[in-house]
Image 1 (cartoon, rainbow, N blue to C red):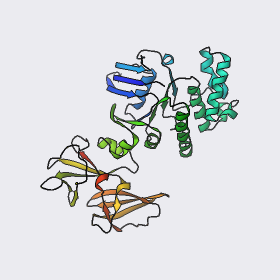
Image 2 (tube, one colour):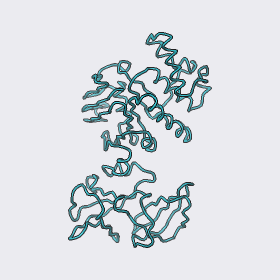
Image 3 (cartoon, rainbow, N blue to C red):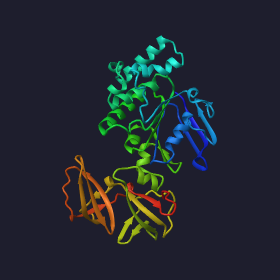
Length: 359
């Protein structure tokens, strides 16, 4: 196992700074996911760790060693790319062994490493095939195997599942989780824009936007207590419901007010006591909105119903706002139905409309 530490990292392409003053510590044996939209800097950060990009400033440490200016081959990392990048004229065995042969690893050790990787990835019966004879999932297993045979302590994954269909992505997500466990919890850094991959694979997620880590936390914390408006809106499908308004305080509990909507905030865990008139945005995830016909709540009108098998997403209007409800697949609602809904206080999120920070 090895730790990875990035200190005050700057990366620029010409005069454009892509990453500025970024700090990140990855613990030994941790599976960390860099999550964010295209252009947020996550692949740039991964390539910097791998030594594939020159950095403008800062330091990169792997296993207690400053590798900032080391060649990729000397950093003790194995990397899996989005494209499989397999040698088309070589068999699977040839692809797995090529790098080891170039490094002049003894033949018996090469055979042992290939045997271990092929058994771990269930590709034993593919060793004599060429890449053209493999499915997408099999090619990606071979690409992962090529990294595994290097016998390193840090593995870097750059969107390795994005070229696969949905069923294969699900299958290989499980395989990667199992692989991390069976490798003795080797350190893994994984780049993706797919939040499902991030939430299911990671020990911690670093959500990135504009070259900045917006929040670094466990999947549960990222999902239930997002640090700001961007994280709240990016993570979750369907996305979090947002209603713009302000907070009023008086002798009693604070109240969120947005036009005809007035929602008490007595159960909300504020970081600091709010000031009256604070411009805020209330956020609540679709699965946390409760149909509550007996206890008042807010009246909504159903606009669109999306049956999705195991669940149904119902889009409703609430005082000029559109909100989504994530309900059981057996839920039977039709457009123009009127429902009473409640917003549980312990499921609410409030964000400052000026800064986007969590209140």
